[in-house]
Length: 126
Image (cartoon, rainbow, N blue to C red; front, side, top):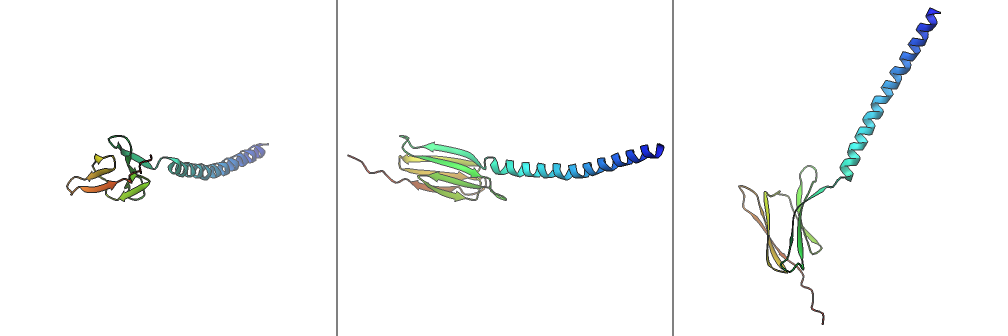
């Protein structure tokens, strides 16, 4: 009867070892899939600034796109966009009027990057 108890214990030990060896890769697989899914689902953009024209007819949105390996800046306006690879320390938008603006991207120790933006004027309807 003693050898039967040892045999049962040995079988339980083998089963536990097999389950442990199976559990670890499955848990790691689920963790990797969860991390990748979270990265793909999470927001890939950070809004840096949004600016409206003096009479709120037009707007400019500046966002940072978290591309791998280097993020980029996108300046979105009037169904158009301008992409920049240098991430600025400071962004400013200065409106000349409702249809013209100057976007300045300033990075410490470098010349500022100045972008002139012109919106298409909507024709007057009478």
